[in-house]
Image 1: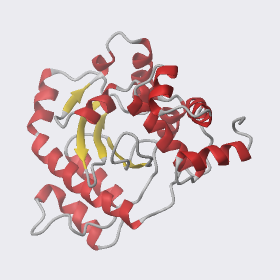
Image 2: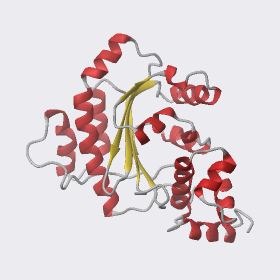
Image 3: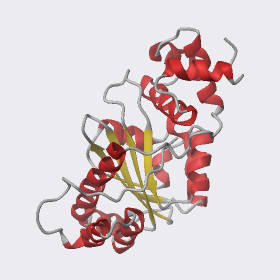
Length: 260
């Protein structure tokens, strides 16, 4: 689902002294180190166990783009999330796509939906039981999400109040970490998941695209939102190393992944 990047450049991110909570982040940048370890130290200071920063680069719904990520969660969970296309039903990503208000969540966010319940059961297995999610917007108009995760599956009133009190520091981390990460994307690196196999859903989307169907057509055919279809195509481009979906179709046909 995502392209992993090591962010280490904070140019144009902060002018002046860094807020105390961000000192590890900017200290690492000055030394030319990866920001993942610094971000993880801040996340732990805030009382969480792991994080994921995910960024899309398509400026509008019908533009092709890619996904990028920086995380301390187990990569086995990232791969499973991708393989099972959980992005289609994840209420956290749905919230962060359309809202900039922070979301404090635990297992109750699944409601009574069986697939969402499965998603959060599997997430908890990898230590992602609850947390805080924040939606972000970049330039030009990219969408992003910073998620801070805790292993506990139930958030009581005291924990929720503690996280709410820390939202100022969490927002500072989100804004400046996101800005630094966008700089690493601009500098350009090859997608980490290039060459990985396409998921069944990605193959379905690509096949329907090869038949001339649009995002709207595919969304109706597969009972998905257009946003989710676009997410799948971004991942297809990253895995195949294609510049756009037309090249992706040509590559998939040439490799025998789909029939023309």
